[in-house]
Length: 497
Ligand code: ARG
Image (cartoon, rainbow, N blue to C red; front, top):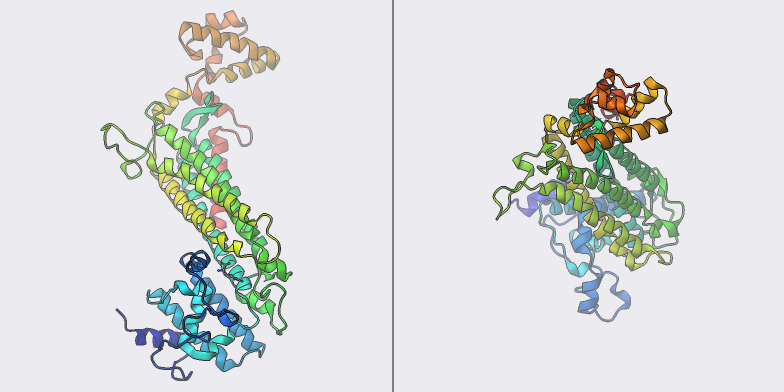
């Protein structure tokens, strides 16, 4: 293991700050915090330490340590601003910055002491900073509160999660577009009410999901734009009397502007809710696709096969090939939409401004984004993995009277009869076929002419699944030419953005 001394001086030097030049001890020793041994950082007005149950319900370090990076980044920016504004000295600011860099190194290498007695990530960092750099650490919290600190850190985390999620959903779209391109003319049954409806192409079906996921990405982008206001400097709730520069800190942290109302700045969690709403809708789309994969891999459908990497066996039934990954993706919409519900219920009815209830905002968001991340990646994997059983799909696509609408349309176009009448006559033809135990293309011309004397032999040209799907060439329709157009359009969109 790397020695602590190397690590510390290495980290500090990487920030352009040597410990010696800062007058810091060569080796950081644990020093007592300004609050004194065993005292909470806020313990001045208290005679006793909090009780065990109080500590247990209050502590959040196990959860919020997850955004340590954001916490350090926001603190470094805050300290730099305090120095620029001459609220603290540049020497203290340099010490604080060097200390925060050391802490970053400690966390990265796993030697940072996360301590439950310091409640949360903010107090853990501050306590450690005091141990590392001494009294200057106490100046970091000038013109700041944990209320604006946590709002800022969490928002930075959620913003980053949304950015990464957009990229992952785009990867999924790319996978779908690629597979759709391979299957622009692979016919399969299209369903309504889960009953055979009209033949479609597999490419068309996959492209439907590209549209859904495209809306998910654009929703995430919208949410990101809306949330991009910086709470830092809202302080506890009312702002501060120090001459801080909120525009500077906002920009330094990549925000478009500071939040314009300090009460809202610390009390807003709709950025997290909106991210969860985006996640919920996306998870819903994933679960629909997953459900179709579950159905399609069922041997009675037999439309697709997932390879061994996405299937599991049964411990008792040797023949089984279970689509567990698809089933689990289908299920993830439960915890993800549950997360939205959980946080919305925490937030509703809370008076302004900060309330400790809001500490419960993080677990649902972390649960949801972890689940979504996995579900998206698993779906991308399955989309790239599945093998389409074209012959089986084509056979099923042509069965179940799936070309009945084509027969009706043919009569409208060729025999110039109203659609309602053609619909009725086609129903008669379907009934006839059904009683004979055949499908529409197997009815003889004579039988068809019994339904309407004007029917000629070229009607058979529209009764196959291929002809049926190829004829639906209206914009956005299932005809291979239309699907090809959409595949091209999306390939362009995904390449440029
Ligand atoms: N751990 C707290 C949270 O997540 C940080 C803010 C605490 N603020 C306070 N005034 N006690 O919400």
